[in-house]
Amino acid sequence: MDRLCSGSEGAGMILCANPRAQYLAQQAEIDAAIARVLNNGRYILGEEEQAFEEEFSAYVGVPYGVGVGSGTDALYLALAACQIGEGDEVITVSHTAVATVAAIELAGATPVLIDIERDFFTLDPNKLEAAITSRTKAIIPVHIYGQPADLDPILDIATRHNLRVIEDCAQAHGAIYKGTRVGARGDIGCFSFYPTKNLGAIGDGGMIVTKDAALAERARLLREYGWAERYVSHIPGGNSRLDELQAAILRAKLRTLDDSNQKRIGIAQQYNECLSDNGLILPRMREDTTHVFHLYVVRVPERHMAQEYLQSRDVNTLVHYPVPVHLQPAYHHRLRVPAQMRETESAAQEILSLPMYPELSQENTQQVIDNLRSFMLARQPVN
Ligand SMILES: Cc1ncc(COP(=O)(O)O)c(C=O)c1O
Image (cartoon, rainbow, N blue to C red; front, side, top):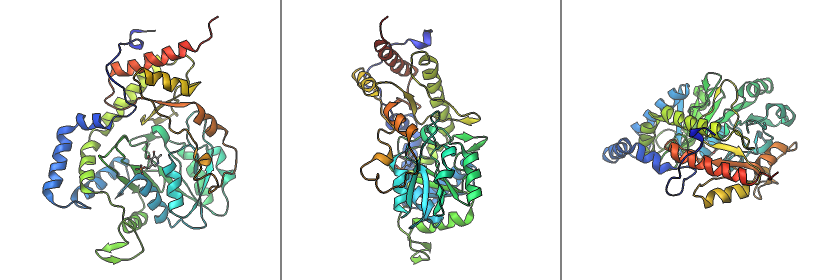
């Protein structure tokens, strides 16, 4: 074990995610952004929101951005903008935040869930075609943990079957697939700005990004009562707006997103170097992609014991996600599940998310490593 792989204990619980640390890292800019909005007096859909739509869509590499109330709303409004609803089927994965599937149901469509690729935890394109029927209208690949799904074959199948592709980018701000940021290749990219995300607000927020002017326009109408001009509804809509405070905070944080992602990648490298020789299965990175490590997820035998062991040593871990959506009580009989979910179900038993946020220090990363190594050592049989 080299020097980097054995470190000292830090004080206090090491959190799995730490949005307050992100606030403190940029406190002056965030406080200034908040003061600017408070003094401006316009608090909903004003100049901050418009500027953030422009800046974030340009960052992704598409012309249009529509700020909405959350990542769930972004997905639901994306489906609605594509006029997908009652009687339609939408294919996605079961290994995702329940929000992906909830959004399909909110749109009135039927979720069809398929299995993931073992190595990458993302939608398995080889399982896609067998799940398509005459009712299928869209595919939602999820760039889970910050790892881009394999978009080329997914887009290829979608084109052949005339399906929309809506990318769930809630966990992958800034991730790159073959030279393009996630969210730019599909018909629509949907982002969440939940506080723990790679680009996180201090409250809820989301955005739809697209290169399609008509889809952007429809999403814009849908997010505010169908209004093209104030008080005149052109289509039935609802209310899902990104407020000025969140937009101003997100503008400040967008300026440091690439730097934050680099810090996450550095922490992942430290984990990779020091955890590779003790029976854990570490995250794999797809070739020609940039994984932005929203989460650093290992596979560990006896996951529950590992989690308790780490917790008792001040290392907080989480499981994303312990129950696949197709097995959840609220959903299991509301879905179509055309084939077995072997990889999804085995992942749910073994995955463990280690502490990961840009401000996590090298010493604290080391503390996680040391404790996980000693857990793995303790469970090895003595010869
Ligand atoms: C993969 C995925 N999709 C969608 C969402 C929904 O985002 P929000 O919590 O902003 O509604 C999340 C966030 O939890 C997510 O991780």
